[in-house]
Amino acid sequence: MIEITEDGVTTTFTNNGIDAKADTTVLGKTTHRLTKNGQTTKAVSNVLGSNTTISEDGDGNPQIVTTVGNIEVDAKPDGSAVHIVTNGSTSSKTTSSILGADTIINNDNVQTLAGKLTSGSFTIKAKSVTKDDGTTVTRFVSVDGSGNETVLGDTLNDGSVFANGNTVEIYEDNGAIFIKITAPLSDDLVVE
Image 1 (cartoon, rainbow, N blue to C red):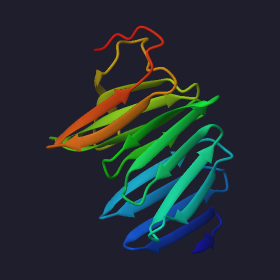
Image 2 (cartoon, one colour):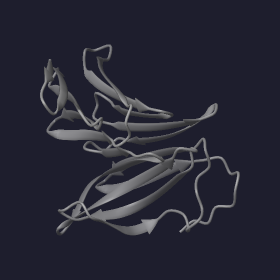
Image 3 (cartoon, rainbow, N blue to C red):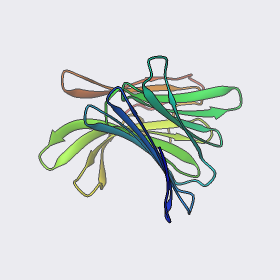
Image 4 (cartoon, helix red, strand yellow):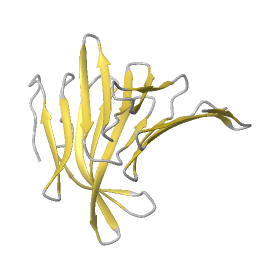
């Protein structure tokens, strides 16, 4: 269903208990949401000129893809989130299998934040930030009820980045949040 309002355009599609929704404002901001089992995987593009497509996989399940420049952000039918930055013939990719991931597309990077581990009034999450050149940094953060982040720990020392062509996986196992990184070793890395 497509609805045109004074604020922009909303497109929705529901099938097999999965809800897909894309909102584009008249100012050009785009938000896509895919809700499965009460968990919403969301992406926001703060960059004008993004293109969002809602489609079906082979089983009729909704999926959403937002692209802008060399950045692609996917919300898969299983609730996972993927961001890909292509630089030349090489791509860097972050995948979160934790339902409810948030992804933000900015002018010079894309960030995915995921996790449901609650500690008091804070939620502990893993964060992957990929710049438009394909380099990535990862860290663990604490997020308060207002969305403010406090860095708990970086996986690399300041100044170190994972080179273009890296792959990051954010996942949970036995209630703990993990970040797995595979990256070419083109520079010295100082691990925290």
